[in-house]
Image 1 (cartoon, rainbow, N blue to C red):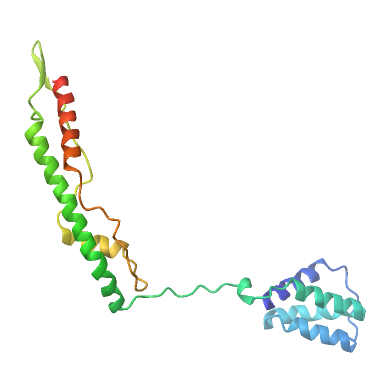
Image 2 (cartoon, rainbow, N blue to C red):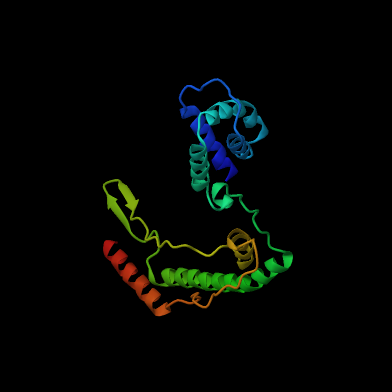
Length: 210
C-alpha cells in the first residue's frame, strides 16, 4: 500500500499545474502532508516535501479529504498483491526421498524388465522369421547393390535397470517433499501374438521386394 501511495503522489506532483510560492500550512494540510510523507522512503521525502507543501497550500479542507480518500481507495487491500515475495522452494528431507524412492524404484525396475523382454523377443523373432540383411541384391552389367535391409526401430531399454533408477529417478522424481505415487496403471507386458504377427507381415512384404 505504501508503494502505491508513493506512486500516486509522485504522479500528482508531475501532473500539477505551476505551483504557488510556499505558504504556511493549516492543521488539516499539515496532517495530510505527514500522512503522505509516511508512505515514502527517506530519499523521496527530501525532494517531495517542498512540492507537497506548495500543492497542499492551494487545497481546501474538502479537497484534501477527497485526495486522501482517493489515494486510499486506489491502494490494494492486501499488500501481498502489491509485491509478491517468492517463497523459498521446499527441500525434501532424506527420509522423504527414501519414502519416494521406495515407491518409484520397483516401478522403474519392472518397466525396464518389460522393455528389455520386448527387445529380446523382437530381435529373436526378426532373426528367425525375416531375411538376412544381405539376402537380396540387384545385379546389372558389372554392378551390384544390396536391397536396403528391413530395419525395425523402436525405443529400446537402457543397458540396465540400475541405470534407469539412477538417471530417471534423480531427474524426474520430485525433490521437494514426500509423495504417494500411483503406478497401478503402468503396463509391464505386451501382446506377444500381436507383435509376432506384425513381424510376420513386415517380413512378408520385404520378401516381395526381394
